[in-house]
Length: 53
Ligand SMILES: [Zn+2]
Image 1 (spheres, rainbow, N blue to C red):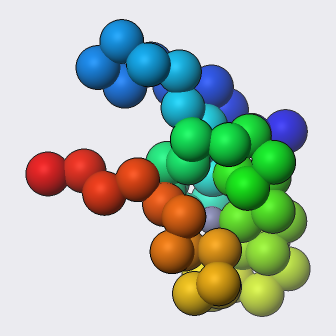
Image 2: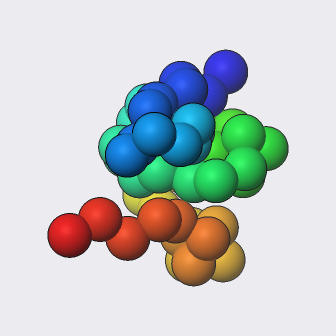
């Protein structure tokens, strides 16, 4: 289950493995499942990540 995080007043979802944030919980869960299995990031998923300055 992806972790909910409050980012500047908005709820976003965090992959607990790689730490990237996503607007959609489903995507964060996909990322987390991928990270657990492959120990690397999937660029098809990563393109949905929220960029943080
Ligand atoms: Zn991840």
